[in-house]
Amino acid sequence: MRTARVLRGAALALLALPALALAEGPQCAPPQPSVVATRAADATAVQRMLELVPACQKDAAFLAALGQLLNRQGRYLEAAEHLERALMLAPELRDAQLSYAVALAGGGDAASAAALLDDLLADPALPPELRAPMQRQRAALAAPAQRPGWQGRFTLATRLGRDSNLLGAPNLGSLALTLAGQTLVLELDPSYLPRSGSTGRVDTQIALHRSDGDGVRWDALASLRSQASPALHAAGYTQADLLLERSQLTPTAQRSDAAAGAAGEAAGPAQGQRLGGGYANASVSALRSLAGARYVAQGLAAGWAGAWRPRADGRGWEKDNCQARMGAQWQERSYLSNPLLSGRYSGVAALASCEQPSGAQWLLGLRAGRELAREPARAGGDQRQGSLRLGASVPVAGLLPAAPSAVAAALEPLRRGTLVLDFEQGRQLDSSSYSALIDSGRTRTISRSAARLEYQGDLALSVQWLIGAEWVAQSSRLALFGMRSNGAYAGLRLGW
Image (cartoon, rainbow, N blue to C red; front, top):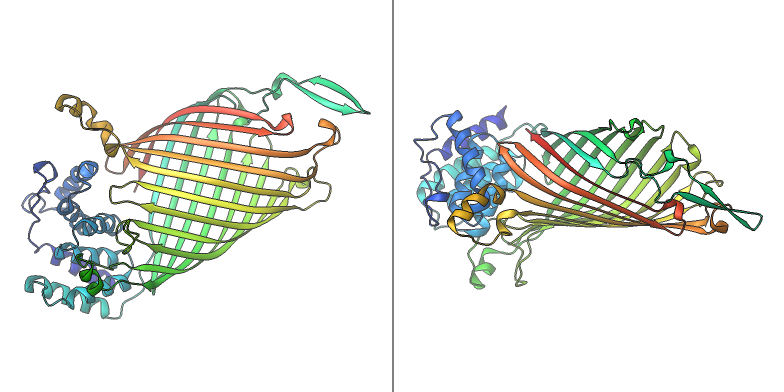
């Protein structure tokens, strides 16, 4: 309760701050205080401003005003993102720095909020009208408070589409078997051939997090996915995933304001800050297919994690918001429908991601390890496995060139969307012959490529429509394991 009172008091203090003036024209102008006097009006103003975000990514005052409105609605995590971007563009916006401190505290990171306020209060040039509310906020943060509770977000997505290969069947009509040195070609039954058809899928996910101070953060994720196909009943399945993680990131290096001044740069919040620490998580996944397959995987992972803001000129880390982690993974994989396929996996993984001030994001992931067969009689024996994943999310406004006014007006709904690209390349190598009957006992290798291209557009606040295409290609030394599939889909996603 005490923490809630602190945050409410700080948010009310922001109402007294003067409105921010904009320099990039009326299209990015925030609502005037008289227009946003009620919570309902705030919600309308926030929705209108969120629609303008792609066109106003470089307007620091606009982003700061949006962050202040989100603070007033208690949407601290969203507010922190926009306020951080505003301060990257204009570190001198002192009222935005106070708003950022409120957002950090509201999001559960009281330690970072207190450090930011300490830096601001140490500046003798801080305007008196801002010093008083900052001192009140700093004193409130210093008071004993209960640990913040869990905060979360729920997402519901549904989509309809069509797939060219519903069961991932091999791309061949016959199978060659080796018997007593002779090759026998058998025609495959039509039920084993690729079949296309429509699909429907529903995804639900709840993501929870809490911060306990000193950089300690807890994350919990639960998701459920269900797919059905009227064209082929066996193509339906249900998959559930659970994950619980604890991480701790603490400052490892910070560039001083004096150093920034010597380089001819403006001092800003957490100037040049880098965070480092560790993480550990436990997970469980379960899949049940209407074709009869049942699978359960239980995993553990632990390693190093870090966050920083690099600069292109190599003199600091203030521009992009980046994160990275690397560590070890262990997993017990159980095929309940066929225990002979079960195994124990151990390996290493690394992940890096960055978000730019423009809103563009990218991700790079690497994984390599070995799965030991639980049963010596498993076809192929132990396996070496590895994968590479590349992901990118780019606002369409940054991709489309300037156009005449009539064309620009027609393209404006499209420019507000986001383009997502996800690509994964994986490879698997068996340690022994898969079967003496197939290709004279040749060792199996599998190379798998999967790609997804998706456009996401905003329909309303917290509601998106999406349209996309997927492609999968798998090749192998053994023709039985080669396959291809592609499909397209459209759907809706709601989040709150």
